[in-house]
Image 1 (tube, helix red, strand yellow):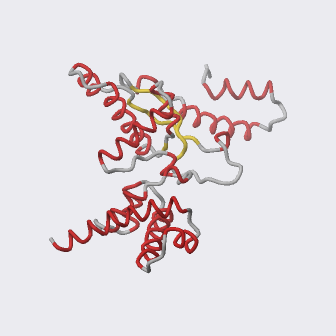
Image 2 (image 1 turned 180 degrees about the horizontal axis):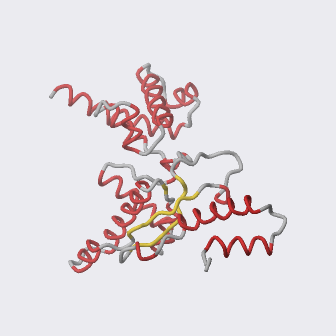
Image 3 (image 1 turned 90 degrees about the horizontal axis):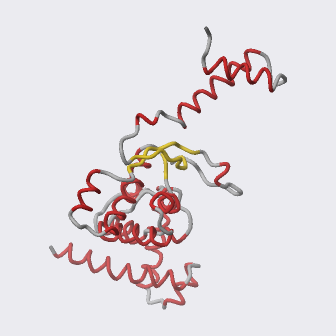
Length: 247
């Protein structure tokens, strides 16, 4: 008896959509459909306690004019919402905020390893907390651990709010790391890394020449607030660089 997924779907297509094509076209369509089903609906027996299946945006997806979530390629990822370590922390009285903060960071990294990338809104939905709370968690975690977490803002370089110029410039100026290494460690594209470093050097050049903040903004075509940010960063890193040279 030929009671398979393929024959059931083939029969359905032949009956409901007879003009779709002949047997070879339908056979090819069914095979592709089966691959999608297997990819996006894996057996739940493969999930461990505390894990969920989630659809992330493909890590290698590229942005473009008019592109929205409906036409972005997705990637199914398995995320550990709750782990045994989380349960142990809760039993020891660790604040819920700390557990949530590390859970969010863990899921962002898990998605990245599975060739997907999550947005703050994904973590917000999964953990049932507001986007602003999740954003604060992520920023706090990154600041405390001096890292950049892989999320859509950093991986796909979306918007100025996702700037991680401090971490990127520090790795270049103090750690003497090359662009490819910095890009890999901060989940930015090499182009984005070079843009931050280029802006850093342009502002530093202007300030060394004695230009005011207003003049530097006019010369570089950057906002005054951005010039101030870079000026503070330059003061911090140049001081750190001098200390390293003395040592």
